[in-house]
Length: 566
Image (cartoon, rainbow, N blue to C red; front, side, top):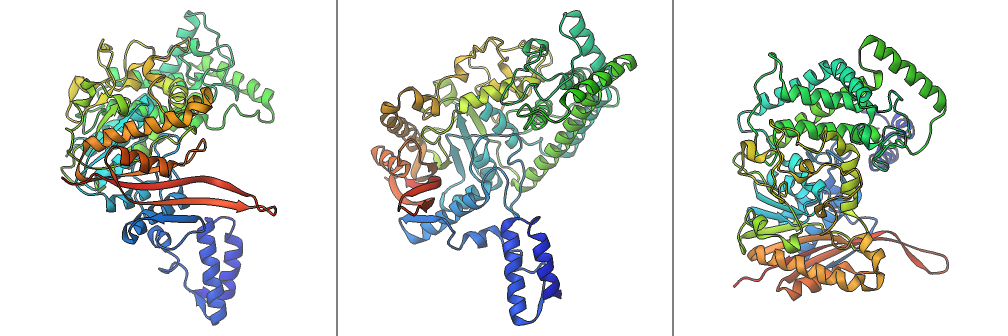
């Protein structure tokens, strides 16, 4: 306890460093104690109010509801959590696990998904627009059998690695092996840096111009300098050494490295998880780069060139290459810690998810075999594309050509494949089956199996199958609304067919392109035989002095539909 006057001063000083909600709560405590003439008890239960307690009260947003009060209460609390905390971070008190590891656009707040599960029955869960795998991770933490579908190869890549777990009983050995391999890659950095320079030199590539703020980034995946995609597959020069060293560490482990652990539970392996961490590390290093030149730009280039020339003479890695290796090790440590936390929250015996990379509206029979039979799923939870808002496949290509380019040395083999072979099956990489193991699961993700095309001629899987995209809206604005409703009905029909009698689907969706998506969703559900249980909406509007109303945030809805029992 501290005097009220001292607490008031602390509140004034700390207001700029505390989260806005926490700062407001501290000021409220100070005012209450000052009025009562007492002391402020810092760290009390009142100050540590949980996110669900906050969500149980009406928010500052405009809220609307339709349906039974007891169901609407749950849906409103979920939407308040979504709007209060956003994505991808989780609120204080909710386990972070693997949520948000690797950037993915938009997404459902994990704590909101957790609350929605309270009105979804059964022990199985389907997400037809899996995205980064938030609902799959939350479903696993509740012991549910989970199934995810997404047309974006990037979504399948991220969701697979967020839901992956080491083999039961081999968690410690797997994490130790991953950390040891990352360290071995770092130890071999000097040799890899020298080999990369010799390779560039023998290929008559431009030589040693160092990385600058004009280098490759997520927004500009190909550097504007001379190196370009041909000089390292689009990977910034500072990252080529650690990429080569990681490849060497995986293909030729030293005597001090333990034998590779078993693949684990999910559609990837510990080796591919290391490449995933390398992609995350490169992605984080590129945030904000290339957007503006810093002061002393020419001096930075001169200094970097001097460091490079010194590294060449000493046959060692540059400072930038060492920084890249350090960031990679940091990402591996973080990933291991977060997967370990996920293992602690997932009940023993929970099966790994089945993740299918394809268009849920038109899945080939070969992919449908990986999903359960019709009328067998207890519940579905998803957030489909908002009409005319995002271009998810465009984002996937941009990331694959940017940070994802670190995954391969060339287009002929996938990381983690011992013999460098690739399956000739055109559907290779379209699914991550939960029950596969060994060689069959290596390189199966389409994200791994597709090389970045130098002429930007991406395979069809990276270009077609998305609905409601911003590109589609620009192509034909007049026909967009009708096409949207047709596609909305098609995917909801697929979900309705998968649901067991009495099963429910919760859909979080936002307005766009002048489409009232709540009405659109309810109408589409009715067209395929689903009944409306309840729905809520959140909006933030302002009124001008002239009486005009404008939206300060996109209106979002949470709709709950149910399949009638026989």
